[in-house]
Image (spheres, rainbow, N blue to C red):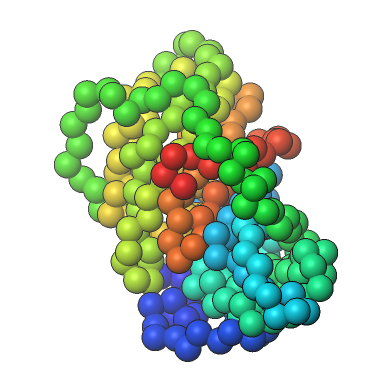
Length: 276
């Protein structure tokens, strides 16, 4: 478990405060988990963003009438801190009985507080339910590998040694799987996700990728670190010209977390999947 997470509200009984309380946000430095992967803030081999979607966003108008909306938060992947998810939820709930004149002052408040916690500018969009309904749900790009017939019996830790490729063939493709599962390192609760891999490099054996992803099933780590581990293991194997890995996780506590990591700049589509 991340040492800082021990002091977070995650896994503990918490009072739900209904008036504006930015001090509820609990930042967790990324450096300890980066060190486990052998990287530092100065040597990050990726660019990217963590997209958070909040489905429990509400505040009061000056008349006292409540408003509900959906929040989208883009936290840079190289920010010094992640924001612990329960503290994020508690902070958002502290807006429930707080008056804002409209979306713009609310958005400015969210940007200020979340950027302070993350240690870098966080992008914020407050979307109406009508906007999100019009968008609907999307399907993941590329080929789904979940139908492959594979056998696996060890789920305790990710097993990069399962990954195989053809070093004599260069391939460009996009693959995805809905079978990613890991556990929260603090509470042990399951985190369910769908993962996408886009690369140009040594031809990746699809069955080996599926068994590797399934090996995360009892692994305890945060969403962001799981995606970074997948990214690094594939980068080491494929020696790619380009590589992008992202995961779309199922929400818990009204929040879903969607980490994106890439060798270069990427345009992120924040489309919701059927499970989101």
